[in-house]
Length: 264
View 1 (cartoon, one colour):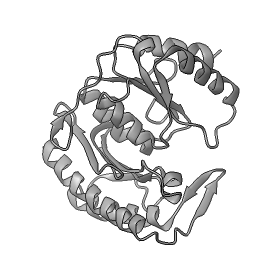
View 2 (cartoon, one colour; view 1 turned 180 degrees about the vertical axis):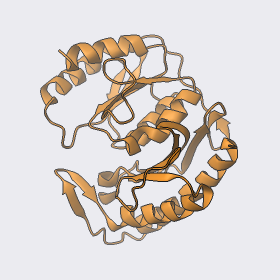
View 3 (spheres, helix red, strand yellow; view 1 turned 90 degrees about the vertical axis):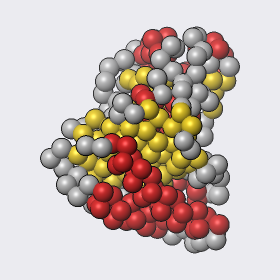
Protein backbone atom coordinates (compact mmCIF):
# COMPACT_ATOMS: atom_id res chain seq x y z
CA UNK A 1 0.00 0.00 0.00
CA UNK A 2 1.33 3.45 -0.97
CA UNK A 3 0.80 5.31 2.30
CA UNK A 4 2.16 8.63 1.06
CA UNK A 5 -0.44 8.75 -1.70
CA UNK A 6 -3.21 7.76 0.71
CA UNK A 7 -2.06 10.48 3.07
CA UNK A 8 -2.20 13.10 0.30
CA UNK A 9 -5.72 12.04 -0.62
CA UNK A 10 -6.72 12.12 3.04
CA UNK A 11 -5.42 15.67 3.32
CA UNK A 12 -7.75 16.70 0.48
CA UNK A 13 -10.71 15.10 2.25
CA UNK A 14 -9.80 16.86 5.49
CA UNK A 15 -9.49 20.19 3.70
CA UNK A 16 -12.99 19.79 2.23
CA UNK A 17 -14.40 19.28 5.72
CA UNK A 18 -12.24 22.09 7.09
CA UNK A 19 -13.44 24.53 4.46
CA UNK A 20 -17.04 23.73 5.34
CA UNK A 21 -16.36 24.27 9.06
CA UNK A 22 -14.55 27.54 8.37
CA UNK A 23 -17.46 28.88 6.32
CA UNK A 24 -19.91 28.05 9.09
CA UNK A 25 -17.61 29.73 11.59
CA UNK A 26 -17.25 32.89 9.48
CA UNK A 27 -20.99 33.09 8.90
CA UNK A 28 -21.74 32.66 12.60
CA UNK A 29 -24.30 30.06 11.59
CA UNK A 30 -26.86 28.86 14.07
CA UNK A 31 -25.13 25.93 15.72
CA UNK A 32 -28.14 23.69 16.49
CA UNK A 33 -26.38 22.49 19.61
CA UNK A 34 -27.20 19.11 21.11
CA UNK A 35 -25.86 17.76 24.40
CA UNK A 36 -24.72 14.13 23.99
CA UNK A 37 -23.77 13.92 27.66
CA UNK A 38 -22.73 16.21 30.47
CA UNK A 39 -20.58 18.96 28.90
CA UNK A 40 -20.35 16.88 25.69
CA UNK A 41 -21.79 18.79 22.75
CA UNK A 42 -22.44 18.21 19.05
CA UNK A 43 -23.64 20.60 16.35
CA UNK A 44 -24.96 20.14 12.84
CA UNK A 45 -21.50 21.31 11.72
CA UNK A 46 -19.88 18.26 13.36
CA UNK A 47 -22.39 15.98 11.70
CA UNK A 48 -22.16 17.54 8.23
CA UNK A 49 -18.35 17.61 8.36
CA UNK A 50 -18.35 13.92 9.24
CA UNK A 51 -20.58 13.11 6.25
CA UNK A 52 -18.18 15.02 4.00
CA UNK A 53 -15.25 13.03 5.37
CA UNK A 54 -16.94 9.64 5.16
CA UNK A 55 -18.05 10.19 1.57
CA UNK A 56 -14.55 11.29 0.52
CA UNK A 57 -12.67 8.58 2.42
CA UNK A 58 -14.85 5.83 0.96
CA UNK A 59 -13.43 6.74 -2.43
CA UNK A 60 -9.84 6.41 -1.22
CA UNK A 61 -10.09 2.97 0.37
CA UNK A 62 -13.49 1.34 -0.24
CA UNK A 63 -12.69 -1.76 1.83
CA UNK A 64 -11.94 0.19 5.00
CA UNK A 65 -14.30 0.36 7.96
CA UNK A 66 -15.13 3.47 9.98
CA UNK A 67 -14.87 4.50 13.63
CA UNK A 68 -16.62 7.87 13.78
CA UNK A 69 -17.40 10.17 16.67
CA UNK A 70 -20.86 11.18 15.48
CA UNK A 71 -21.91 7.74 14.26
CA UNK A 72 -22.48 8.63 10.61
CA UNK A 73 -21.24 5.12 9.86
CA UNK A 74 -19.62 2.49 12.06
CA UNK A 75 -18.41 -0.61 10.28
CA UNK A 76 -15.47 -2.84 11.12
CA UNK A 77 -12.98 -3.30 8.31
CA UNK A 78 -11.24 -6.63 7.84
CA UNK A 79 -7.85 -4.90 7.85
CA UNK A 80 -8.26 -1.13 7.69
CA UNK A 81 -10.40 1.40 9.56
CA UNK A 82 -10.74 5.15 9.27
CA UNK A 83 -10.88 6.84 12.70
CA UNK A 84 -12.59 10.23 12.42
CA UNK A 85 -13.16 13.24 14.62
CA UNK A 86 -14.83 15.77 12.31
CA UNK A 87 -14.53 18.65 14.78
CA UNK A 88 -12.21 18.21 17.73
CA UNK A 89 -12.86 21.11 20.07
CA UNK A 90 -16.61 21.49 19.54
CA UNK A 91 -17.05 23.54 22.71
CA UNK A 92 -14.41 25.99 21.44
CA UNK A 93 -16.23 26.14 18.09
CA UNK A 94 -19.57 26.85 19.75
CA UNK A 95 -18.04 29.78 21.62
CA UNK A 96 -16.02 31.10 18.69
CA UNK A 97 -12.71 30.25 20.34
CA UNK A 98 -9.73 28.49 18.78
CA UNK A 99 -8.30 25.92 18.47
CA UNK A 100 -10.57 23.39 16.83
CA UNK A 101 -9.46 20.80 14.34
CA UNK A 102 -10.37 18.03 11.93
CA UNK A 103 -8.65 14.75 12.82
CA UNK A 104 -8.50 11.66 10.60
CA UNK A 105 -6.41 8.51 10.91
CA UNK A 106 -6.18 5.28 8.99
CA UNK A 107 -5.53 2.23 11.18
CA UNK A 108 -4.26 -1.18 10.09
CA UNK A 109 -5.34 -3.96 12.44
CA UNK A 110 -5.97 -1.32 15.10
CA UNK A 111 -2.64 0.49 14.68
CA UNK A 112 -2.73 4.04 13.23
CA UNK A 113 -0.57 4.27 10.10
CA UNK A 114 -1.73 7.56 8.51
CA UNK A 115 -2.69 10.69 10.40
CA UNK A 116 -3.93 14.16 9.41
CA UNK A 117 -4.81 16.94 11.84
CA UNK A 118 -5.92 20.27 10.41
CA UNK A 119 -6.11 23.03 12.99
CA UNK A 120 -8.40 25.66 11.55
CA UNK A 121 -7.47 28.70 13.62
CA UNK A 122 -3.93 28.92 12.23
CA UNK A 123 -4.80 26.97 9.06
CA UNK A 124 -2.10 24.43 9.84
CA UNK A 125 -2.20 20.95 8.33
CA UNK A 126 -0.18 18.35 10.25
CA UNK A 127 0.19 15.01 8.50
CA UNK A 128 2.28 11.87 8.44
CA UNK A 129 2.38 8.19 7.62
CA UNK A 130 4.16 5.14 8.99
CA UNK A 131 7.89 5.21 8.22
CA UNK A 132 7.39 8.32 6.08
CA UNK A 133 7.83 11.12 8.59
CA UNK A 134 5.51 13.82 9.88
CA UNK A 135 5.06 17.28 8.42
CA UNK A 136 3.45 20.67 8.86
CA UNK A 137 2.65 22.31 5.55
CA UNK A 138 5.55 20.35 3.93
CA UNK A 139 8.04 21.14 6.70
CA UNK A 140 9.28 18.08 8.65
CA UNK A 141 8.16 17.86 12.26
CA UNK A 142 10.55 17.06 15.08
CA UNK A 143 9.86 16.82 18.79
CA UNK A 144 11.67 19.05 21.28
CA UNK A 145 14.99 18.16 22.85
CA UNK A 146 14.22 19.07 26.47
CA UNK A 147 15.40 16.31 28.78
CA UNK A 148 13.62 17.08 32.06
CA UNK A 149 10.11 17.99 33.16
CA UNK A 150 11.61 21.01 34.91
CA UNK A 151 12.49 22.49 31.50
CA UNK A 152 9.27 21.39 29.79
CA UNK A 153 5.99 22.99 28.77
CA UNK A 154 3.17 20.52 29.38
CA UNK A 155 -0.39 20.44 28.00
CA UNK A 156 -3.46 18.68 29.33
CA UNK A 157 -7.22 18.54 28.91
CA UNK A 158 -9.86 18.86 31.60
CA UNK A 159 -12.31 15.97 32.03
CA UNK A 160 -15.84 16.79 30.88
CA UNK A 161 -17.52 13.60 32.08
CA UNK A 162 -14.98 11.22 33.67
CA UNK A 163 -14.89 12.79 37.12
CA UNK A 164 -14.15 9.68 39.17
CA UNK A 165 -10.44 10.59 39.33
CA UNK A 166 -10.95 14.33 39.60
CA UNK A 167 -9.17 14.76 42.94
CA UNK A 168 -6.11 12.93 41.65
CA UNK A 169 -6.20 14.90 38.39
CA UNK A 170 -6.20 18.18 40.31
CA UNK A 171 -3.12 16.98 42.15
CA UNK A 172 -1.36 16.49 38.82
CA UNK A 173 -2.18 20.06 37.87
CA UNK A 174 -0.69 21.26 41.12
CA UNK A 175 2.49 19.23 40.53
CA UNK A 176 3.04 20.38 36.94
CA UNK A 177 2.29 24.02 37.73
CA UNK A 178 4.97 23.97 40.41
CA UNK A 179 7.58 21.78 38.73
CA UNK A 180 7.61 22.64 35.01
CA UNK A 181 7.84 25.74 32.84
CA UNK A 182 4.07 25.84 32.65
CA UNK A 183 0.81 24.02 31.99
CA UNK A 184 -1.53 24.72 29.09
CA UNK A 185 -5.08 23.65 28.22
CA UNK A 186 -6.33 24.35 24.68
CA UNK A 187 -9.47 22.22 24.47
CA UNK A 188 -8.47 20.12 21.44
CA UNK A 189 -6.52 16.94 22.15
CA UNK A 190 -5.74 16.41 18.46
CA UNK A 191 -4.11 19.84 18.34
CA UNK A 192 -2.27 19.23 21.61
CA UNK A 193 -0.64 16.03 20.33
CA UNK A 194 0.22 17.65 17.00
CA UNK A 195 1.93 20.44 18.92
CA UNK A 196 3.99 17.91 20.88
CA UNK A 197 5.04 16.42 17.53
CA UNK A 198 5.96 19.93 16.36
CA UNK A 199 8.09 20.62 19.45
CA UNK A 200 5.82 23.41 20.73
CA UNK A 201 4.95 21.35 23.77
CA UNK A 202 7.22 18.82 25.41
CA UNK A 203 4.39 16.64 26.69
CA UNK A 204 0.64 16.14 26.92
CA UNK A 205 -1.60 13.96 29.06
CA UNK A 206 -5.33 13.49 29.42
CA UNK A 207 -7.88 11.02 30.75
CA UNK A 208 -11.32 10.35 29.27
CA UNK A 209 -10.33 10.48 25.60
CA UNK A 210 -11.57 8.34 22.72
CA UNK A 211 -9.71 6.82 19.79
CA UNK A 212 -10.87 9.57 17.41
CA UNK A 213 -9.31 12.20 19.69
CA UNK A 214 -5.82 10.71 19.55
CA UNK A 215 -5.38 8.34 16.58
CA UNK A 216 -4.08 10.85 14.04
CA UNK A 217 -1.86 12.54 16.61
CA UNK A 218 -0.26 9.21 17.51
CA UNK A 219 1.03 8.87 13.94
CA UNK A 220 2.41 12.41 13.96
CA UNK A 221 4.10 11.94 17.31
CA UNK A 222 5.77 8.66 16.45
CA UNK A 223 7.02 9.90 13.10
CA UNK A 224 8.38 13.08 14.70
CA UNK A 225 10.44 11.04 17.17
CA UNK A 226 8.12 11.16 20.17
CA UNK A 227 6.57 8.54 22.41
CA UNK A 228 3.14 7.70 23.79
CA UNK A 229 1.78 5.37 26.46
CA UNK A 230 -1.06 4.97 28.89
CA UNK A 231 -0.73 6.34 32.43
CA UNK A 232 1.08 3.19 33.61
CA UNK A 233 3.56 3.19 30.75
CA UNK A 234 1.70 0.49 28.82
CA UNK A 235 0.34 0.46 25.29
CA UNK A 236 -3.41 0.75 26.00
CA UNK A 237 -3.64 4.35 24.85
CA UNK A 238 -5.66 4.25 21.61
CA UNK A 239 -8.81 2.69 23.07
CA UNK A 240 -7.89 2.89 26.77
CA UNK A 241 -9.25 6.42 27.39
CA UNK A 242 -5.95 7.81 28.69
CA UNK A 243 -2.72 8.90 27.07
CA UNK A 244 0.68 10.37 27.82
CA UNK A 245 2.54 11.91 24.88
CA UNK A 246 6.05 13.30 25.03
CA UNK A 247 9.24 14.07 23.15
CA UNK A 248 10.55 10.73 24.43
CA UNK A 249 13.38 12.18 26.50
CA UNK A 250 11.08 13.08 29.40
CA UNK A 251 8.77 10.09 29.02
CA UNK A 252 9.93 7.93 31.91
CA UNK A 253 9.90 10.87 34.30
CA UNK A 254 6.50 11.93 32.97
CA UNK A 255 5.04 8.45 33.52
CA UNK A 256 6.44 8.26 37.03
CA UNK A 257 4.69 11.47 38.06
CA UNK A 258 1.33 10.60 36.46
CA UNK A 259 1.37 6.98 37.62
CA UNK A 260 2.26 7.86 41.18
CA UNK A 261 -0.52 10.43 41.47
CA UNK A 262 -3.29 8.92 39.32
CA UNK A 263 -2.86 5.20 40.05
CA UNK A 264 -2.24 5.14 43.79
